[in-house]
Length: 220
Image (tube, rainbow, N blue to C red; front, side, top):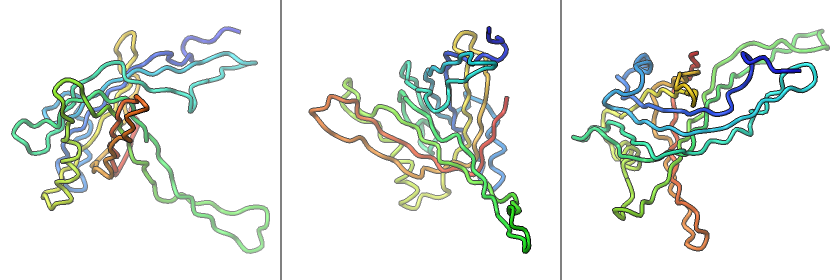
């Protein structure tokens, strides 16, 4: 049985992220739809692959949790943090995870009803978004520290607190058309992790930025 081309999954795609400085206040998330390419933003792209196959009478999507994200090129990154240059620095991000929403479901037990419980919709919970990239560069001999400075500035009392609204776009690798867009609001640097240093392993030193935010939406 042939797969309907309208239902086939993308086998190759790119993704791009932009962080635009939030306008502040609880309503700052409205600026997240501003799109990529504003002056205070971080951009990255990478390629990933997934598989789709026909099984039995329908489509079996092999994407699931097995989708692998790997950087195809080093992309310039810039986040306005109040510096004169308005840039956080350049980096080739390799992975973006955390596009997830959970909802608290409240259960109510009714007296005399033993075949189940009533479930009511509760509050939404948003998973932190995690960005990873290589940290150490052989040319120039120095690491880029702007990600660390963002968090350290807030902890040292920098006010107002710098927040970012984010736009994550998934692009068709063949046509470049946007196939899906996630938007998150009022991001804060929840954690910055340095690499595990082992001179004998030969592995790339990876740093990790975890962003806590206040809302996530999918736009088609």
